[in-house]
Image 1 (cartoon, rainbow, N blue to C red):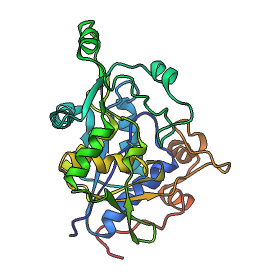
Image 2 (cartoon, helix red, strand yellow):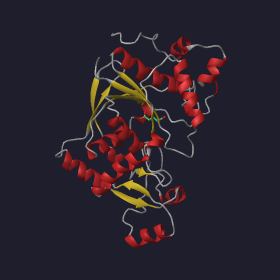
Image 3 (cartoon, helix red, strand yellow):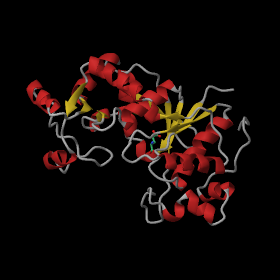
Image 4 (tube, helix red, strand yellow):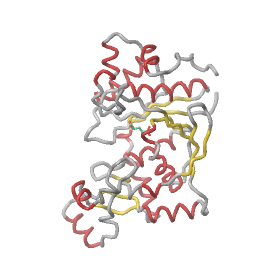
Length: 297
Ligand code: GLU
């Protein structure tokens, strides 16, 4: 039994497509090949989009793919107090500030030439140095703020914690070669750590859960590579263990577009309706045949 712990962490905002199958199978097979553990985590903090019926369908589709995981499955919406406790630790370090800006406020004030690595407008600092009276007034009106990471303050705290050493992570390439990557969290604006509508955010919840579940190898799509810079920063600021990362290729349409929730023919349900089985899906996404549990390669 090795100490490798991997996870598949889908957001139940829709049905799984071939890209999810690639993520899930890589995480599963890596754990199985090493005699490690494979976990499933339902990332349903986005209560405006997540639906229990999608979570149930995901579990069913993963079973159809021939995957098995440890129980219990961690369901993020059942753990809001833990995310808030982590946010409190950042507040205690003076690293979060309240922000009442709407998407429209941000779009109106943002510099169109400057975006976060995921393409969203770079937060233009609207509430960064807001005075206490303005904050109190909005709270008095019953509004709930988002809490944003003060990137400048966070970089300082990070430099102190790392004694000036660079922030890095280990990326395992598809051929198994480890590479040391220097993270650059400063290319992100002041990220939302606690949303207005939900007492958590993706970046906070993923860091809290990878740590508490003891995940040692985060396998996920290359579209989340840049987010790792922020995740590593939060791991250091929260004093939690550092997993290794392996960001895999994305499955795209032949014209290069990414698969999305409206996945048409590449949806697992559609493939299944056409008579495909799990081995066909593996072949279609360029993966080897299933390996028996516990075998080593
Ligand atoms: N829940 C995220 C998604 O479905 C994945 C997060 C992760 O693997 O870190 O895109």
